[in-house]
Image 1 (tube, rainbow, N blue to C red):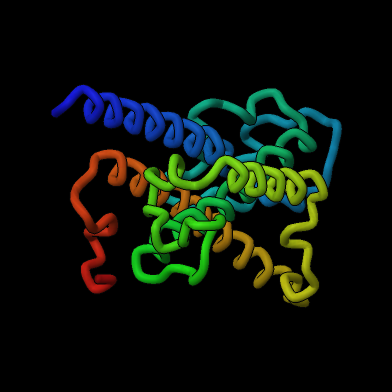
Image 2: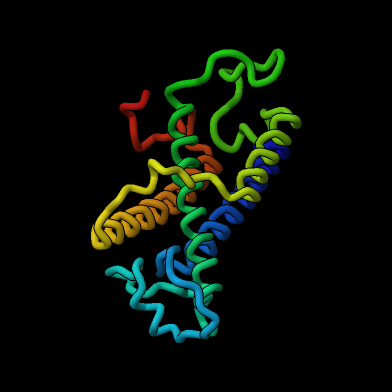
Length: 204
């Protein structure tokens, strides 16, 4: 490979490792519901192990021991972060798959059609600078205001047992999406050919 190609592969591998590390760190405290009542009392790891989100076969999975010596308020903050990362990862997986089969019409910027923006990691350099400014500003605004997901339609009146079941499903979907996104990034960085989603040939 030419020096430029080797440099690009090295850069993408570094990005892939950073992405996987961030995803694992975001899911390392995978063990309790976000709606738990806040408390300043420091609880033991054993008490957290009984919270919603602890399931077989991993059980109480906290390899980095983020829950050690923290109170309920801090624990709930970690859970909210895991839930947010899971939701973003689900959108990220869709963001990888959807452009493989469909693109918006028109231009992302004057003279740059959406159809010309490559999928996956290559899009990082293809999206214009002002486009990234808009994306980062929008994400920052939503994160600061904290209103995304706070919709009446997303709060059905359910029995406690059914609500807990759905909360667990959302957590599991988010955890799966974080792993799926990490694998998509690895696959993308390895450059297996023209079709990014090689495991789903029916897309093409």
